[in-house]
Image 1 (cartoon, one colour):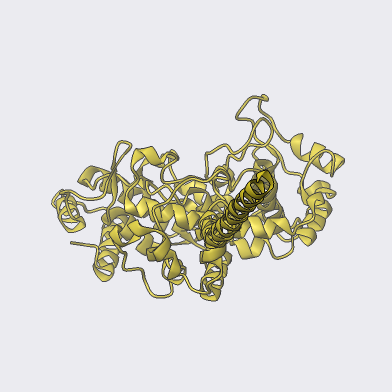
Image 2: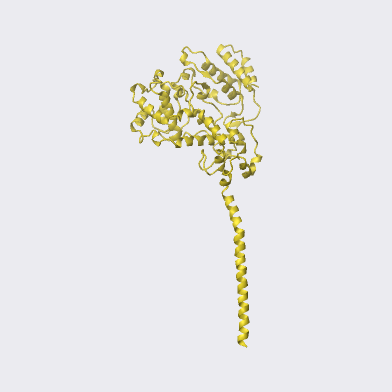
Length: 438
């Protein structure tokens, strides 16, 4: 009897155990089966860059950022960098860890540059850009002398990156010639070719942008997004990042030995730094500044227009462009007051000051070598088009006098000095043609 009782009970217990085992196996299978697509979805969500980069067009970026449709769209000019690179499809700007250059922390940078049209347009845009304009392009409050004066052979990034190694060799050749070692207030524009003034300038700017902080410390429209940048400033930040990336890529392929340091070029560096005739402090002139000034002394027109007053490095490596002191234009600038170049709200007094300066610059010269042409279109747009600055505050909208009203007010003063009258006439004509007069 005991045996017959225990045997069925064992079978019952075994059956329950088998059932539990089957249930457990089924549960494991279902959980595993259901987790596979969940893990795949999580992977796609955690790596959005891979998803964005897989498409050859910019449009999918819109699907990633829901707020894009809320941003106002610009009517960018056909063929412009902004149009070719799809700036209307970009989100609001945010400063990355590597501020100022395109890095992997933001997929939009890489996405934009996948476009052949964007890359080709960027190449043309940057090749033609004046490096001096690059330094201050984020600052709408003024323009540079290098932009104002129209030259037959302007400085461009294409020029400075054409042959850096050859430029260094020509610099070494020039500085081994005692005749080229001008100091103090000496100038000799007749030595321009003999002393390779163009190579001195090219080599200086390669050092500024590739081995100094010319890219990192360029002027930005805002340096803090908490300042609530305007939409124009936001798009400018994107544009500057594209421009920065182009320069960084150009510099990465250069030989590091091109850098003008005591370690790379002991005698050459010591010679250049020996020209510094001011005490060593935070704003002492560095090698780049000294090379630019020598190029100006030797007659390079672009070097003779440098007037950037911003420091880009620590002691010994600052860039303070004062080449204008040794160029042709300096003889006609009076006291060197640049306030008329600022983009303040239009007024008769400020415009009159600007027209007096422009009349001096545009007047006939006794020596044909002193003649130069001005970009009057730039002047008209700069003085007549907003935005303007009220102190440090940017004013994009608001009531202000038109150029037509101001020129009329100036003429009512009874201006009779012929050069000034001619300047007013030329300015008025260009402003009318450009549609910025009224």
